[in-house]
Length: 629
Image 1 (cartoon, rainbow, N blue to C red):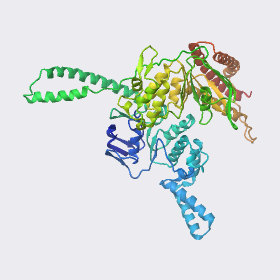
Image 2 (image 1 turned 60 degrees about the horizontal axis):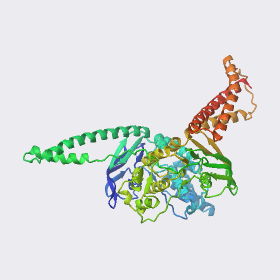
Image 3 (image 1 turned 135 degrees about the vertical axis):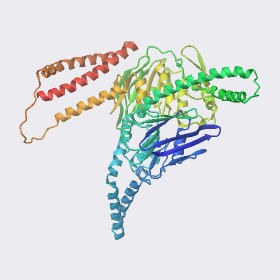
Image 4 (image 1 turned 120 degrees about the vertical axis):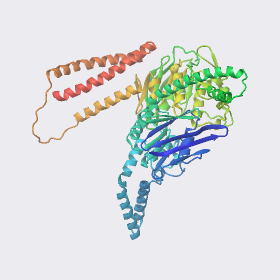
């Protein structure tokens, strides 16, 4: 049964048609994602569904007995409203009841009149009826997950990222039936994203969201709607299913188009013979020819070719970080960190928000100086730095003009050249869009343009701070392909787990108190190993925790079998040997010697050894506990 239905909806801005005659429905309990390129109108469609904008034609129907909440891409709040006032400003029956109870309690404390006492008792009865007493604890849990702890802070003092988190927290605490989310993972660190992923997976609600996070899509959504070339395609499955079926659809479309063009060429020969439409059969054939002509003129979206931009020559010395430290007041962000970058190295940076990731990147780029230590840059290194703020060109400038101010021609790695217009087209700006004014661009298109300007400046060391935010999946795939073939070094901050796994050779993990762990392997491998390590640590703590002496019947202790004794002895020998091999590999990787292939081989072996050590240690702990050692 549908909880909302979109029927023949169209929307355009001036001459630009965003979508036309779009129809789809969202069933009760269905969790769907809307996928489209930047600038196609995803946010506009969500605004129309939520009644914040009107369509040019068509209608949206929402069941009246269901409560809906919406998270916009750029939420706005009254500037002088506090965080708690925003959270409790809702027409939701539960929240309205809690708000009335809090107000009645304040009035009763101010004056214990019979009227105030009666009002307070009525509110208590309503709280009982709705089981609303747990609301505050649930609200505080969600706020804690998003690190929102200053509930009396005015919204005007919040950063853009904190406003987005506050808006997301507000939608989650309202206990709605239908949830509409526009880029919910933006400004969230990986820990928050994984919690939100788990929360939405287990909650019984209907969900329609726009997101570029492919792991998030795969875990949460059971339906994908794709808006492409004016058509809406539906895929009844998660993101992995969508990729498979989309490839099938594109193959079938290509084969059908080729067949249509073959028939069109035959009919064109017949038309050139100037047939006289004397019979109804000839007239019908001429009419069919023009329909065939229209079908054969359809252009399928071209698949982007491999693109490798020419980089400046890189010398032997690239970049060295020697015992760098940085603090702000009592907050230690980077503490005694060292690393020697090698040619072609690609490093991902992960950690919770506000822990110092951007600070490290700013020290490398020279924007700020470390308190201690040195950043030694090679003479040939040319940084390309993409910051979260992006560029701010005049609104009245056209896109192609902005890009041509940087470079009219981009040299490629194979000796060819690409014009600024062709470069824009490769990253999803079609030739019509290129002559659009900057102020007409969507948020995703603005970030994409800023990123392209960074890439085309011929750098040999890219510093990218959250490059995936607001980008559509098509652009992410193109960017990933570009970075994989980029000959220089890449260092990037990202909370996109798919992007991290695909690009990074190793990751810098910010653990807090200025400590940075250099993990040689993908983020997914790191996460699995961390989960195993945490499980081992919890088991150790449980074993070390003193137990109260209680009288109980004596039970027989299950001793180790002969085979288990042999296994226990072998583990005591194997674990130290593996630790030595791990230490030796770490020395090799940090020595600065070895080729790129050597580094990859060492890092794979290092990850394998870490995994084996943790498995054997867990088994050793289990046998040790039973043996009484």
